Image: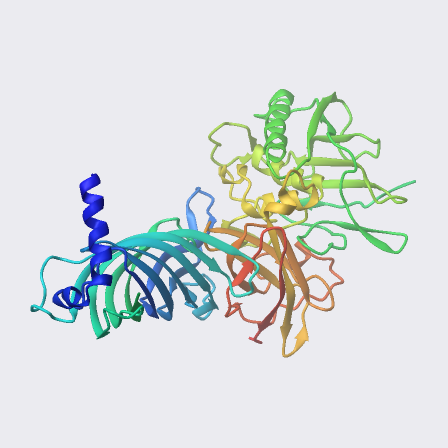
Length: 230
Length: 333
């Protein structure tokens, strides 16, 4: 293990001392120990939250449906920030936070007394904070390419604040997916070593929070951000 | 100083009412010009059972079934009310003797009245002094665990009447249809305190619902009821004017439970407590599944000329607080 640490330290130190050596690396692959800060937008797709009926009890002990409801969290775009650090050449650890305002909708139908169908809505303020890992596969689009594909997985804490700010729901989220990073500019000898863009597609799984039946619900998500490397 | 309110609050029909207090249909009395909620000042509420049985129900059966019904109310974890069986008595219910008594009486002229609850109130303090329940022996009764065809389940009807004895009025959480020859048949109900009983043979009325639990807890809050649960409040308007007597139903989307209340004053104000925190759907409807007199004094003008509808926003009940002012606008039929 000591040898491994020594090797890692060498990899951190060598690029800072030898710019020519750094140029020999792929520009999309920073060395371990490097930080990356990103900010961008995150679009989260529609998330069904299940159905529930307002029932009354019949004389036989059965159910009579007064009306039915079906709930969902509509798609929304929000902000996302991330700080990552290279642990190894192909492995990065991230902490991230996001903010979005998805509309919560409850569609009401099938009223026993024929009330017109309706949709009740409110806007949720949703905050997440989490952590994850990014893995870069051992191949490139072409040698020296500025494009680096990656796979990602992570999870974290979810806070959803109702519109009137009088009730907070908490839960967890998990996500996995993949994407690419494209290095727009590379300056290995400067403190600010690079500027790039990141695009990823994820499956976002949320549990608890505003999940009326306590289940897990999955929705697609697309993230697009700009990052800088130090 | 005592005066009897001479109420007949029944499972099958109602004869009168008192002014409802805001939040739930609980009873109120006016003392010194101020309205007070009618409730027991001290618990356990001691009750006697008459030593007279009827066909199929002995005095011992009567006491056992009534005891189960009292125990059901007492078991509500968020309510503090308690009851205590004080013994058998030869006195019939309805006598102003300072003793709360349950028992049978033959009232064949009341051909749609299964049972009724009466009160004696201290007019100086507004507190309950006595409450009697009579069960009409003109009807066939049963205490069989699984019920009996063509016989009314004593425990179910006792559960309803004990709700009245405790201070609860009627709930409108039920759907009915008119029967040929008069009267209504219950299609579904989600409150023991719905004024019309299930058909003979049914035992579906032995279980308290969310509406009943919220009501009794609102009257006799216990534990963290006020901190853990929340409330809604607002007003109902039609053509910009407040309306009285609109039935407002709050549906807890996460738990699937319903709690009802009414707009209860000239400003159209409504409120309901004991709601679980979280998003709710609000439905408003006119009273059309029971006689209006089952809920309000006959002298009150209840507006039933509007369509059933829903509010177009999600109402969020906070933990230990109120939703804030909600306006429910209804449309004329």
